[in-house]
Image 1 (cartoon, rainbow, N blue to C red):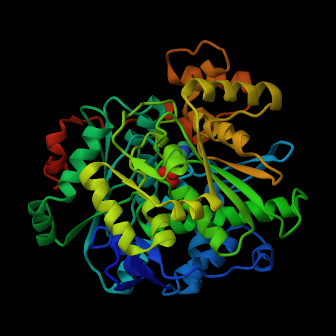
Image 2: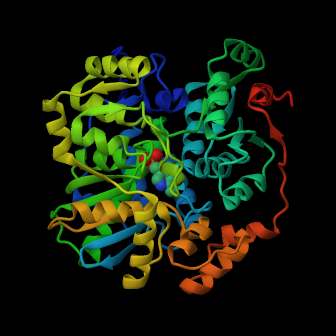
Length: 484
Ligand SMILES: *Cc1c(COP(=O)(O)O)cnc(C)c1O
């Protein structure tokens, strides 16, 4: 399988090339040249999640040794993900939760970030690239920990994470500052997420930094979802959800299923669209947003307008104004010339507009809806009181969007975070006063819901913090150069 760039230079790279580079040299994202077909019979014949993952990965990563892929997914999606890997739970008639937070850091990002480091190391080996890869991550929460856990002690790679000193939840902060490993570093950056992200972006585009690092045989790279290596593992669980529903009698093979996805950078939902292009009977994909409703407006009007107020919400992983992976969908729908023009206009004017004919095609596959914090809190309470189902604020936003778009077909809501990551917000949503201390709040939520918090979160209380430095944004450069 070859991969093109969305900005259209026409040259293609192998999967290993796309995973090593991350971003194309022309600023575009790598997209597959074709959609490999995967039949339901083949998918249903797989005995477990790792086998299904190997089957999907083999379709796209055709330059990788299939035996390597099979071994690797066996290691990644085995014990570390617990029994069910991605359990699909019935919540109401016709409405299901696929819980994607049973991985080592309780984030759905584990599905990609546990696998991608191994794909990267192999890609470098295949391409004869002996450089050290220095991963820099600016995070508002979940990405930082999932990336740290994924890249911890991976040979030939170092990882440095920058989180805003005021921005993450206390649980998320502790997840990062207690990280083990000899190749990891974590810094709090004075300021908000934008300060951290701007600082990191500046380092990436600083030719002097690149030259200093190159002299030491080091190349900078990012762990965020623009890399194809993060997207492809996410296609697997759409097939998995479908197979689960067929096996448990919720569905007859061949009937359509709708999915509703809490969306930020548009990576997770796009993986569902790829599954559909591969032949999975997906009806519609519903894009759920919080008060940062740029995507809801886009699907309704065809206008993508990033010049708007930015809101901090109780679903922080969806607080985003520019959803990078939308560029991939637009490439598939409208081709490289249009995409290039739109992205240039976005950089220049903060907005672009897509023609009605293209929007019509997009709307055949996608719906969208948004919900604010208050509505999400109400949904957490309603799901708990009426169905006995406990969910986090991101998942609650998706439930609201799912209800708006629920049709005849069963709907699977992707549950992307454990409610115990946000114990205070969830307790308050349930109408209970939240203790000031996060671990007391976690215990109170355990008592209220009669379910234990994931061990990886509960044990944070007793782990020593290894990284306690707070730096100003200007110092991100020195941190990246290892000079702090
Ligand atoms: C990252 C994240 C999302 C958004 O996923 P995208 O692929 O960026 O759209 C949603 N929920 C949670 C909990 C996340 O961590």
